[in-house]
Length: 105
Image (cartoon, rainbow, N blue to C red; front, top):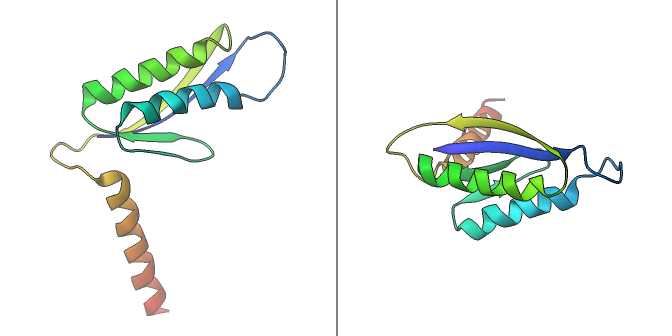
């Protein structure tokens, strides 16, 4: 399965609107997990089996909790049993489709 998630603190001291330190703590947890992952400007996507992916997301959420009194968590999952390598495979298939489309123009 693939799970894209975004996690951010709120309600902390300091009143700033930047959450990069909290996000860095979450991404460090994800990267330390050893599971395939990708981080972009909005989400971190992680690939693996249900229990291992959600254990990492819980740990990442806990890490962000240290930065505020509340935590916001957004999840989107692609549950496709029997498929692996989709973190890269889906993007490769998209790029191939774009190339085919460009050749038709």
